[in-house]
Length: 165
Image (cartoon, one colour):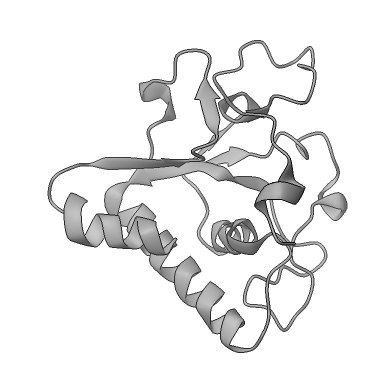
């Protein structure tokens, strides 16, 4: 979120209308076009779109600024694909960064780091457009019958090698 906030403030301000933030370890498979544009755009996480809300991996510790109480939350959004109007994404990045850093000062790390903070933000600042999981599928999963087109996907990786937790 710090990189997104800094990029917007130092480079993109007054030069672009929209920004989309995508995981670098992902790939495009199909068209991703203007149908995805909106004020604040979120992508439903492919790992949880069929689950009941009570199974979403929201941050459940009230001490974290990413906390969502049981019964809260609309969808579980992925942190690897989101975007929208530049100033909407700037506000999201600035807020999530501050909350993430304030948690860190108290030795709190949300369950899914920035993704947890993004989900908290989206609960209180509803996205104007919600994209289906076809906009960030997971390569290690078979394609379910309701997913007709995979547009973008996260490549297979060994999380034990790239993440300390």
